Image 1: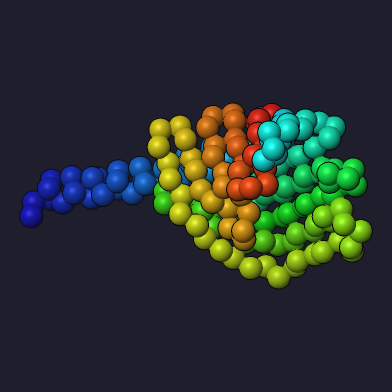
Image 2 (image 1 turned 135 degrees about the vertical axis):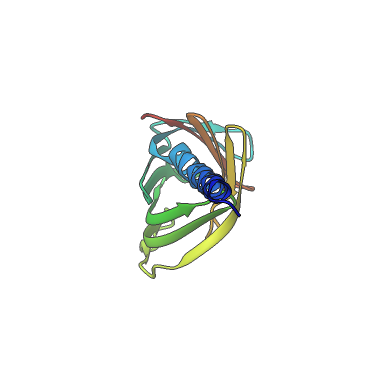
Length: 164
């Protein structure tokens, strides 16, 4: 193989590697930002909006924080909070829970999880649409530009918008 062919082959593989890395970076950037919950739709068709349901989701450089507050059907306050790390490749979403806290509004004590467990799920990317099921029995997520929906079958569909 000539020196020129070797250089061309190296350049080709470098370009392929760069493009593949860029795909992961681009997908991660689709998640990054500060998001706010604008509406929740319940299975009976009822919709809730702030201040009945409030949510903030911050995602930046592999670290995320989610906080959602709502009222139970009998009007009691409830919340879920999560801090985790994540990685997104072209085909997989991986998350490691660092801490979670949940109060379901039942009057039972808040539950906490500090175990640091990791799970992965398949991810699909088509055009400007990124979709995956969040690990740990959490909702399915679909990101499209500055909009994102989180669907927990039989419980709710949350509609989010990116603030920045």
